[in-house]
Length: 158
Image (spheres, helix red, strand yellow):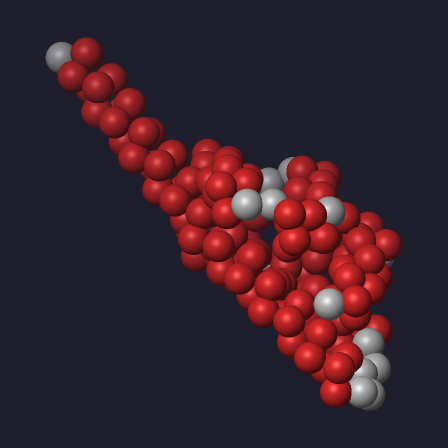
């Protein structure tokens, strides 16, 4: 677990560079063309907060904390007309960006280090899987409430 803690601290200390790198990937990805609707500073800040406080997200935040955060993000992206597939792809890129960084930065040699790294990767996978799920819920809730609002507006105008 000590290695996992060291890797988390490494990520947190490079959070700004990681967020900047991810922003460039999103802006240059043909799969994410609707992200032009998301202000660059908003996207970078959201990702930075996750990277900067990764230890908290992985070790001390509850599933309901992740739910709250990602339902909010999903709803915000739906409000910005970002398709759910693009929200999911961005979360996937966020994880891949992190894994690429870890691969470049870490040189594991001893079996105990490999075990610690695997433990952390499991925590990362679990976190990002939940992020995708809860972001989808946020998108769905926003779309449902928008449809309900639009339907009641049509009824009122008749």
